[in-house]
Length: 92
Image 1 (tube, helix red, strand yellow):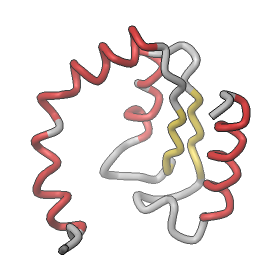
Image 2: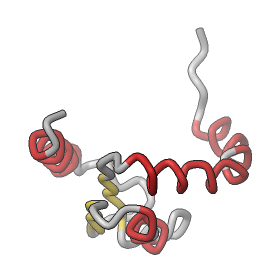
Image 3: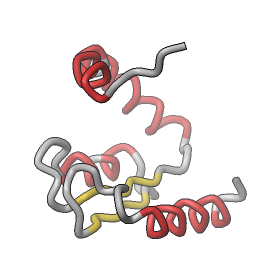
Image 4: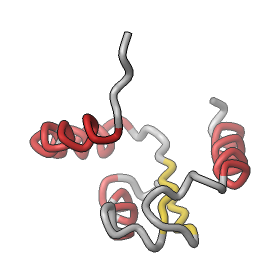
């Protein structure tokens, strides 16, 4: 099985946009815990994209990291700690 490349994912991203209202409604009604860890320097998915989760979930946890678009690269331990702590707090 072939795995998608970043370019394949980028080309497919436009199919997500029409679904945003459904995602937002789900976040508002389900009360699912939300963790958004984002690069402050991301020029593609800008920080307001992360903080927008607060519009649909007052309990959304937002972390704006000193990082560019590929925030995870080189910061694996930071992300792992955020995720593990989030899971622990929410009993996941």
